[in-house]
Image 1 (cartoon, rainbow, N blue to C red):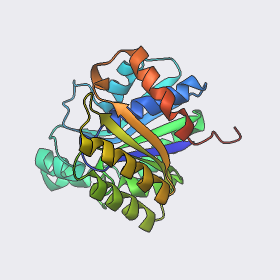
Image 2 (cartoon, helix red, strand yellow):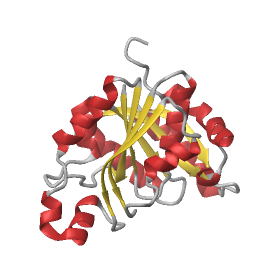
Image 3 (cartoon, rainbow, N blue to C red):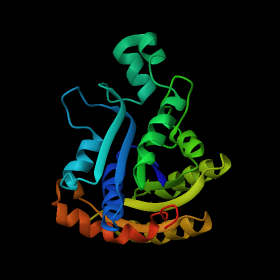
Length: 238
C-alpha cells in the first residue's frame, strides 16, 4: 500500500504528519518505508525529513527511510537544482519513472510506503514537471493532504483538494498538521470548516495533530498517531 503525503503549503507539518502516519502503520504491525523524492534545504551531512521521521519513531527495525535526491538550497526542487548547478543540474534530476521504480521496489517487501512530497501539491519534482500528484497517479495511491488551522487555510485547502480531484488523484485523508496549545476563535471555526471540506471531497478526516511534535518524545508521537489509525488505507488483502 502506497500513500502520498502533500501539504497545502510549505511548513504545514507534513513531516510530523508523515511520522504519525508511519507510527500508526507500525502499530498495526506493518513493515513501513518512508520515501522523499526530493529533499531540499539540507546539506550532505544534515538530517533530512526522512531522518527526522526515523528519529521521532526511535528507528524501529520495521522502518526504512530513503531519499530520491538531495539539494542544498532551500527552494523548490527544480529551482534548487538550478541554483546549485545550473541547467545541467536540472537535467540531471531523476524523472518520474525513476521515482516510480524506487517506490515500487520499496513496496515490494513493505506493507506501507509513505511518499512525502516537497511543498505543496503542484511543486515540480522533476525536469519534466512531474509533481506529487503525478506520483500518486503513477502508483495509484490515495493522497493525504496536510493543512494549517490558521487564517487563509480554507481557500488553500479547497484549492488543493479541487486540483487533486481534477487530476484524478484518489482522496485519502485531510489532517491539520499543527494545532496550537491556545487556539483562537479562528482556529476553532476553521477546524469545523476543514472537517466539512474533507467530507465534501471524499477525504477521511484525520483531525489535528498537536504543535511541537518535532521535539516530542517517541511516546508522544506514538500517542498522537493513534488518531490517524483510522485514516490509513487498508493493506492489500488485509
